[in-house]
Amino acid sequence: MERVLSGIRSTGNLHLGNYFGAIQNFLKLQNENDCYFFIADYHSLTTHPAPENLFENTRQVLIEYLAAGIDPEKCTLYVQSDVPEIPELYLLLNMNAYQGELERCTTFKDKVRKQPDNVNAGLLTYPVLMAADILIHRATKVPVGKDQEQHLEMARTFAKRFNFMYHTDYLIEPVAYNFGNALVKVPGLDGSGKMGKSENNAINLIDEPEVIRKKVMKAMTDGGPTVPNQPMPESIANLFAIMKIISEPDTYQFFIEQYNSCTVRYGDMKKKLAEDIIVFTTPIRERIKDISKDADYLNKVAKLGKDKARASATETISNVRKIIGFRSF
Image (cartoon, rainbow, N blue to C red; front, top):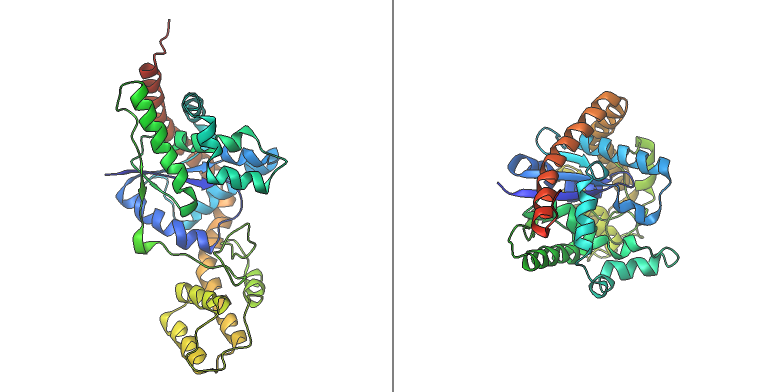
């Protein structure tokens, strides 16, 4: 059984892109592997969230992942800051991470451009903290998107460097978990790119029906096809891509045929798509509301995850300290 680890952003509501792009695969992984899923609240500090936002965002993400089907009995679901061994390993790995390699990291360069007034050390050493997240549980596989591949490679570098410096093979060099064709990319409603929080083009799992209707009806379209079977512009292709994921095959096929025959009415198509999204998200939204009212259950889940994660992390940090040479008097 593989030990698989994946981090979860601690900001923003989950949306359809998250669900089909990651959560569905997490649901499969938790049945087949030893999975560690954590809410990355330490990572969020690079943007300086207010204290009340930090807690509420973390709590909301925990609620929504549980509502989406992550089972704390099948996996280890925990909050990053509940495991103090992670920042300790982060500190130890930082001693052997070099300024030049961190400054060359693509995501660091991107962040410097996006937030030039807040270029903090946490941004620079972000890959080291990510490596600590992975190596603390000696995970063998990590599901990563294209934008995180460099960070995973750096985690491999830090593990290899540690093993070389201390003449050991203790730290495992993780590899990417490839979902292959199972990874579904959900496009946004703005006509280009993928669905995402920062792009403001997403349908959130917690959105009420009227909100969903308004968002879908505002989705970008054009004047309609004028030639049978003509290629679709990106905005229209994206709308059909969402319908293919959400709606019944017969519904999707009906509107495809209408498009190819130049008789499609985008208003009717968007109304149908909105109702299908509502049907899909309603059970999840209701579970989100129910779980959010059950403080005892949330506390139980958080404690269970904390205890399981610390059992693994404590063993790793104890061995790492011995390997480095720390001893108690």
